[in-house]
Image (cartoon, rainbow, N blue to C red; front, side, top):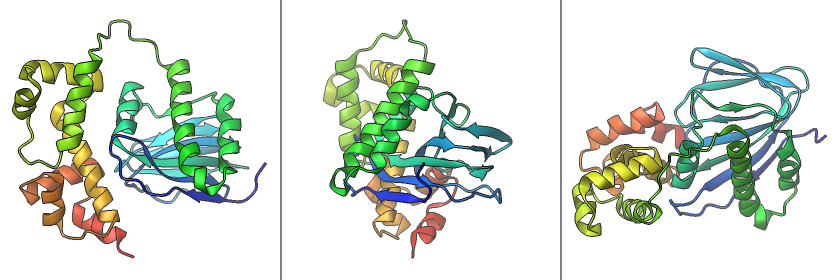
Length: 270
């Protein structure tokens, strides 16, 4: 058993249609329950040993060896250690990650999966990967673990009727044009020659998010990336993300992240 902390950082790459992994960490230090906190990234955790608890708003869940669990941007939580508690986690962002979470129905109300020891060897081996390949192994571990969760815990939806070509074209158009303040179902309808109601229906059925919710999610993730890269003007960030109204942008940002963009900017200033 590894008995010291390890944190592997992943090089940044700007590709919003992928999963951008940020770091890969083995945590062995004792975690004390103090107060709930929220973060700006998603995290997938694997419990390596011992027992602990995760505190969320209005709930406490026990953790034990072999469990996989998740935390979410803007959702307050606190991890508490008991005896011999250690865990690994990979933090990530990206629209593909959002889509997989939605597809597997992983959310604030369904974030803990027991009995996942089968993936441990893959996680453990990943920590020893050489630095120039850490981005590949961390993304590989995420996808492998998501697949494991889907196979073990998600019942197949036999009623799903996928129109993959249409969904791909609609999603790609949104991903390529999210910074356009005029982007709407009407503009997509004209560009792709699909009926507006069809676009709304097929997109929500397959992506599990409405058009506006998906668009806002991409824009806010981009805003977080811009802030982490050093942008500090809320007005400029709003404009570059596709919002013509900075006040509306601030409301959407706070809804998704739990804090205002100004407070988030201040938290990123070293």
